[in-house]
Length: 277
Image (tube, rainbow, N blue to C red; front, side, top):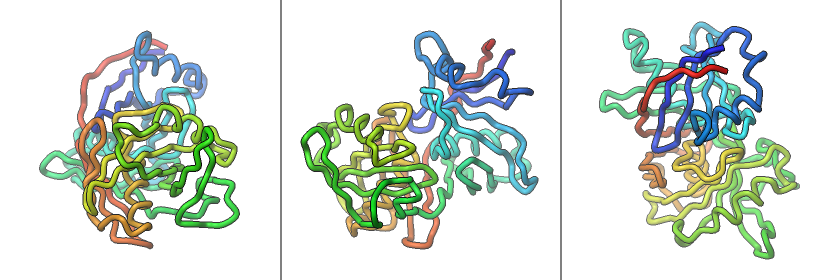
């Protein structure tokens, strides 16, 4: 089976994007995605985005998200932005506003005239059962012992699970040491993404993210949203925040509880290709 694909990236968060072939489940298992995700012997990506016809014709596309370790996840913010850019590129006559279906729910998107893409990532859910996380009650901050160090963190679901730690400097944050340990901690039945947030001021943060199933990536869209949500809930941030990630800058806006959170940034096609599976 041959797959025609696009390699796309949003802030350095890179994706293999392709239309679902017939009988995809017969060929595309976790082992296949791991092989495709290898940066030396495959195509290489943080996530693979498989596109299919929407279940509801009011929406433009249905997409599934697979990590480079072969696991399927619920949502991907930068991936959603890349898909929205691709849908507009394919059919600009349908307009710059579109809705898309995913395993994490329906996503609204807007392809702006300046080339940036915005997606509504839903309402942050702080209920620990939404992650899921084994905590007895919902709190603004939780504590955990990691490698003999007591850490404090916030937790939120953005359609996928996130833990957010506040650090003094992202350059020296223990991402490689703490990230995998927290991801696989028994508290998190489906594992979790782990963000390390440095607050520059109320409208500006720096962020590094250890992504579940992918390790540290150059950017994580839902991670940027999670950091904004946790920081705003703690009273640290304003409604509009610039998020500097290793791969570039995103902008996140959130009016507050009960409101959707919006993520904005660039989405770019790097190259097209094909591969036999």
